[in-house]
Image 1: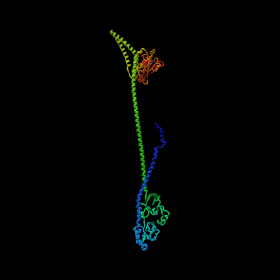
Image 2: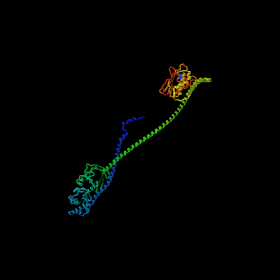
Image 3: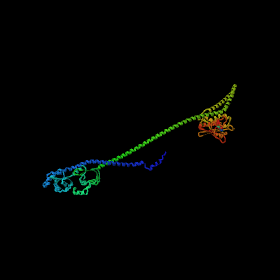
Image 4: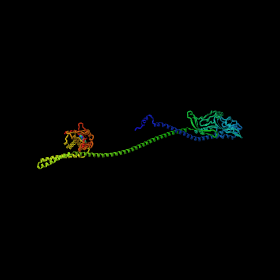
Length: 636
Ligand code: ADP
């Protein structure tokens, strides 16, 4: 059966793209998006975690190195105040002489050497250098007027002088610690210690540490990277710039700003900065991102900033991101594969289920059909049994009828038979009486001749009774009959009738072997010949034609008479049982019925032809056992 959707489905492949194909084509897109999302999330998370870890370790480093800066400065803090205890210094300040100056110069030189500072010197109340540790050097401070220096101005007022600056004489950066020297409660001069902080930078360099220290003006005074030195960490106002330029604190240096490319606050004291690359290959290299952590120093009020490069964290995060993206893709592929497999299994299960159902349905139908077949088989068997029973009954009835027909013929012929037998009996009686007398007379020849005649008569009587017995015997449908013998037997049986009603018989048939019982064939012939004799009874010219020929494995024998023929009113009832037109007990109406039935049982038939020029022809058609050549017989 064709489903209504067959035609559109058949056209579909050429007109539309299968949804499965679309799914396959679109599948890479969400997978790529998923990979990107996973990769980004992993990257972002890894960066956050990495920076946090960096911040934690940076915190420790920051503390360590900030303390190092503090201790570097604090070791020299006490030094200027020490000079107050030195009486030679007080004496020089109160009453300066060359001798005293030389004395103090020597003292300061030794002190400076021992303390590891850059220079130690003493100023009078006007800010002129009275004695200095570097009195021997060409660029000695001796006699120099440093009253403009902020540290002097603070110290002379009794405040601790703290100052980072670039030396006006040497052009060398240094940290100046100043102290107002008192004598009897009055400040008589100022002691100053200059220390160099660049060893700290060297130490940072050795430790591969990136850091800088910015002073209270926000100017980087110490830096692991020299290019960042003397740059402002935040924008300077024009006023501040002018003030700083006037103070010559940073000598003649033009103060620039350290300008990060990006700046992002990470925590209260930490931010993410991207700084342009410094050093020799500054132009070629990529900008570097740092985590900048800042801590205020206790004394002086400077800021120590530690720079931790974050590119390692970013690189690691990028590989984490890539790893996560690949893992996501792998997971997605596994899920897809699992899903496909699940579908295949589901399809197989459904197919198996459908097969099972179809099988069950088939089995059910087979069981139903088997039951139907069994019941119809039973019905058929019952019908066959009934038919067999009916056939047996029919055959028995037919046999009975045949037998009845035979007996009827014999009954009809009984008078003629009796006559036929009475004649030889009478002759026998006469002959036997004569023979006795001839024997008594001794006429042996005559007696012997009479006995021979008696013998012949007895033979004849035996033949008559023998043929009657054979005729009356029950027989089968099939058999092997000789046509010539059957015609002779029938005519012999009817001999008494033929003697009384003579007729001319024309024979034109062969002695064919027919597939019918001999006696039955004889009976059919007797019936047909008797009917012909009966029909021609009242006429003087009586003729009977027996014409036969073989055709298609059958033999057709025509029994034709020149009688009055059969009237149309009789024709329709001809083969009906017990239909007869013969008066009294002459006819039973079974002759034609039985003859037709016997012919049919043997696989042949009996039909009638009504001839135009009078007379009736019956055609007996019987199967041949063996084909025998047509052999025309004698004509009587
Ligand atoms: P029955 O001979 O006992 O009457 P049949 O069945 O042999 O029964 O014949 C039925 C009838 O057919 C006969 O009574 C007769 O009227 C008619 N009939 C049969 N053969 C012939 C024939 N050769 N010519 C004319 N009538 C015939």
